[in-house]
Length: 382
Image (cartoon, rainbow, N blue to C red; front, top):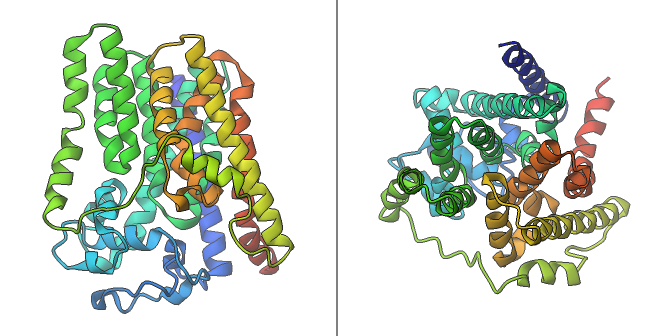
């Protein structure tokens, strides 16, 4: 009970830190308009029903992924035609977990969607920090390490631009925690939610199934396979209601990451800040190579278990990723591959192998640099 109370305190502090940053940047950089966190930009018009929402609150003219998940939260059941205003409706609506919860919390009221979405995002920050605190304490480390949840690349991007990646980061830690504690029902429930947050969550399902096959646990294997049924049913629901997702996600092994490695400059260098960003993007890419190398090292040692198997599956999937914009910068591949960094981080905690933290350490400088203009805006306000 005491451990739970400490973990709850750590989680509450993490939420307060995240909310304090969002509140500061909204009032100092977005004219007090919370919709600015969605980075709507001006390249993607809003549906007429949302015309009163002001996309000018965002300083990013091109916008970011939050603009599309914002639409999903307003129209999760595709009854209002908002999918016509999204870049890839099948992909965006497939990742229903956070937008869907936000819609439920707001009782479908457009006026409450933004607050509900932000609240759900903070709720997953609370859950992820709580589970990480529990995991750390159960392996002989301070529960205060739960606040490190805020330093996961996908979580930092979600705090900054309200993407949906915080959910999978939290669910990954919760699933591993309960699986290691032998709380099978809880781990299975979280496993069912993972692909609904982002389809890469299927790697956790595959890793868990692999473990059950190795252990000849056929009943648990069947239940694990059944856990993806909600995701399959949701995809079938979307199949006839949205255009087909024709995105070429996969390529030959290592083509995506090798192409990015051999082309370090991805955008025109127009100033010192951009030059530093390009250099730090490349350092972050080195972090990805390190993550893959550490995973290979685990495999060569024939380390098996739910944590290791999930890392193997995710690493195998990562080397097949060929879509160019995934590898464009740390904000993209950093959040896409965050579950792999999380698994290595949990191994670092469990086995006291600190070098497993190297990939995240390589990526964090570039993520933090993206916060620098906002920090300047906050400091100018004082």
